[in-house]
Image (cartoon, rainbow, N blue to C red):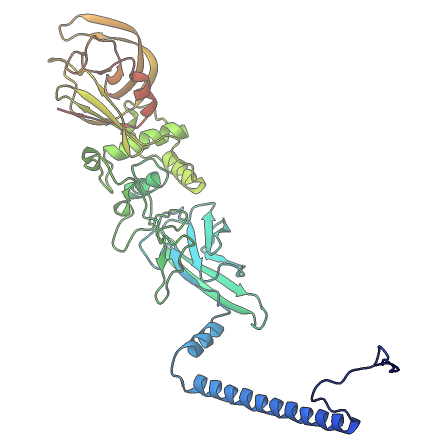
Amino acid sequence: MAGSTAPPSSARRSRPGEPTSPAAARALAKAAARRRAAVRRRRTVLVALVAVLVGLLVVVWPSGRAAVAVHRVASAAPVPAVVATSPPMDGAPVPPTEAVELRTTTESGVEVADARLSPPVAGSWRWCEEDLLCFQPSSPYPFGARETLSLPLRQPARAGHPAHETTFELTFQVVAGESIGLAQDLLAQLGYLPLRPPGTLQPLPGSSRPGDADGDPDDVGVLTSAAGEGMTLAQSLGWRWPSVPSSLRALWTPGTKGVMTDGAIVQFDRVEGLESGSYPPYQATLTPAFWQALLRAALANRRDPDDYAYAMVSEQEPETLVVWSDGQDALRTLVNTGIPGGATPVGTWPVYLRYPEQTMRGTTVTGQPYVYPDVKDVNYFTGNIAIHAFPRDRYGFPQSQGCVEVPPSVAPEVYALLHYGSLVTVQA
C-alpha cells in the first residue's frame, strides 16, 4: 500500500498458534518441563521393574544359562595336574631305557622344577607338545629298580587367581635283567624288526585325557615300550604294518631267539660294527658287547638305517621271487632255483654275507668244477647258497646248482632292497 513501511529484515515472524506475549511463553515452557520430568520418572520405574524380574528368574530357575555361567567362572583357572602317563602307573616292567611321558591338564603356564627320580637317573626334561612333558634318560635305569618320579607342578598367580602348587608321583618297575624279550623289545623300538611297541599314554584313575588339537586320540608323540598287565615286553609288540605276509608272521616267536630275531641281530651287529667273525655270524650269542651297544643305541634312538625287507622264493613253476619292503610288495620277478641233485634248500634264513661282485667257484652236481667270474649282486643266506644275478635265456624253472638266479636287469634292484639280516624264505 502506498505510504507503508516494511519491517526490518532481522525481525522474527510469529508462527500460527504461538503466544505473542512474554507471559504466555513462560507458561508454555513450564508445562513442557513438567512433561519431561514425568517421562523420566516413568522410565526409571520401568527399568527397576525389569531388573527385579531378571533377578527373580536367575534365583528360581533350577538350571540353564545361569548354572552354566557359574560353572564357567569356577573353571576359569585350571589347576595343574597330570592326567595320563607312559609308562602306566604300576604297570608291567619296562626296559632300562624307557622314556617317560606325562600329559597335563594345562597347555601352558605350568612351571616344572626340581623333578626327582629315585633311584636317580641322568636325563633331560622337555615339552614335546604344549601339554606333553617328556623325560629322556641319558643312562639306563638300574635293572630291577622300582623308580619313583616326584614332580612339583606350579601354576603362577594370575589376575584374580592365586598361585597353586601340587606334587605328582609316578612309580614304575624296571625289568630284572637281560633277556631275549628285552632284546626283541629294544630291536623293535629301533626298527630292526617288523614290529613295534604299543606306545600308548594310560589315563590315570578318575581323570580323562584332554583331546589332541587334531582330535586324533592315538596321536601321542614318541612311541614307548610299556607292556600291558600280565604281558611280557616281547608279547606286547604289534605289527608295524596292517598287511604282513603270513609266512613272515609265522616266524615271530616272542621271548624266543628264533630266525626273525637272528636276522635283527645280524643287521644290528653290522650297523654297530659288532660282527663276531663266526660263520654264519647270526649264530653268535648275545654278548656283553651286544647289550652295551643295544642300550646305547636305544638311549640315543639310533635306528636301523635300512627299510625292513623280506624275500620270498617260490619253487612252484613259474618260479618267482617277491621282495616285501617297508610294508608292501616292492618287486616281483621270475627266477631259477637248483636242479635235482643241487636243489635249493627249503626254509628261512637271514642274509649274512653280501658282495656287489664275486668270482664263484664250485662243483656241479655231476662232479665237474666250475668258475664263474664277475657274478654280481650276491646275497648269501645259508651256507654257499645265494640270491645273485645270472644270465639265462629263460627264467621260471630249475636251472642252477642251488642258488637263486635273478635276471641281470633286475638283480641291482633286488640287491638295493635287501641288506644284512633280511630274511629269505624258500617255499617248495
